[in-house]
Length: 212
Image (cartoon, rainbow, N blue to C red; front, side, top):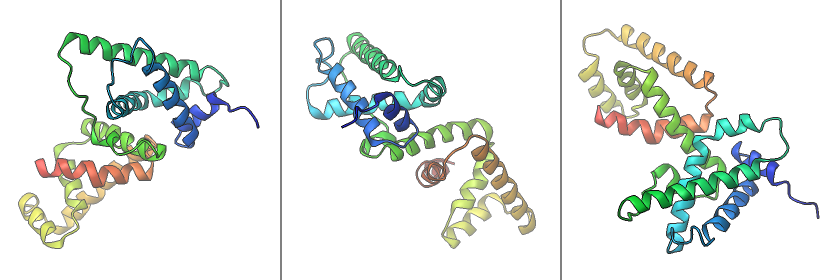
């Protein structure tokens, strides 16, 4: 049986293409967590899982940087991840020593499961897309996108009356097309996956639309 290439598997996991890579990272994480230096951080399996998920969230914030850093390398990624985990756990200890211990709260984007790396990537990337759109789109753009995603014809008509009663149907259609094209360019230029965009439209954008 051939030896597992941990560097390759971790790299492929960060690309969303390896379940084994996720397992390798998890094993490294728990080995560090169970050491004498850090075993006070988690009292039960649920807290261990929450810490792991919080680390994955931190990891995927640096995903593009790590993939670029190790693009043409065939070793070193395991050590890099191990050091990243150790620094993460040190930070957790420092934070908990500065204030009363509180239960770690993890965003919905990473609370569901660690069994599907592609799902994790899509959800975390969807929040990155959300942050990017907040910077590049105007409030008027968001109003239009909220209008576009409404499926119910009566709700759509009410929304139209509330925000676009002062323009013609033709002008509204042209605005819709302009915003769609603006959104399409951002998505294509930043190489967001279709599944990422779908998660954003179904789970993140509606929340913003309700607040508008």
